[in-house]
Length: 173
Image (cartoon, rainbow, N blue to C red; front, side, top):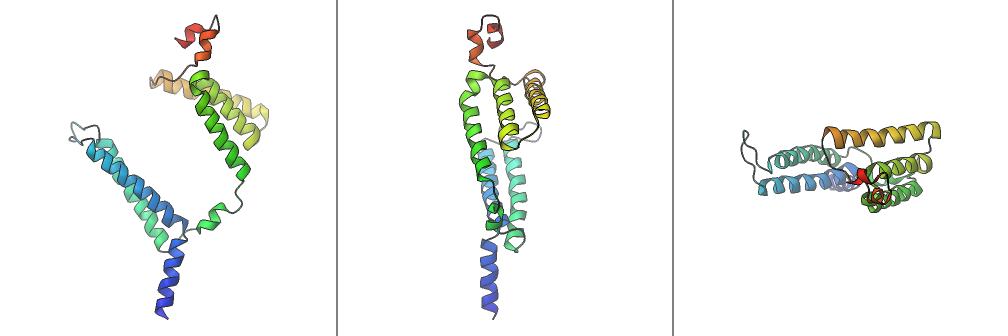
């Protein structure tokens, strides 16, 4: 009777991707809020170092709570459906490429590493014709570098390999 319906609903809720994803992000949101609180909020006119983190964490928590509630109501796909048809070879290649990117980032610098990563992804993971992948990779790598380094004044690694090249060593300094 009624007990069977309640148990079936709870089991359905526990199998919903939205429920578990929402809970995960709710945990992240609560953690960010807590860390913001610990960093000191300050005031609206003189915000402290934790002001943005606190409010961002609250916003994340509110959004994730709405997703968790939707999952608890039985809305959204089942967890098993998310992994059906996954291309695991591509997942492993992307993870390996990101690890190599992280290892070589300081040595090769932002532009070369980003260029290599984008070319790899557009050649082997989700193939794109070279007439598109090469200009897109170049434009994206140099464009992002320009915005971060020149416009936003974020210091990015230029690559220690430049120190060994006679006429390019000035770029590394």
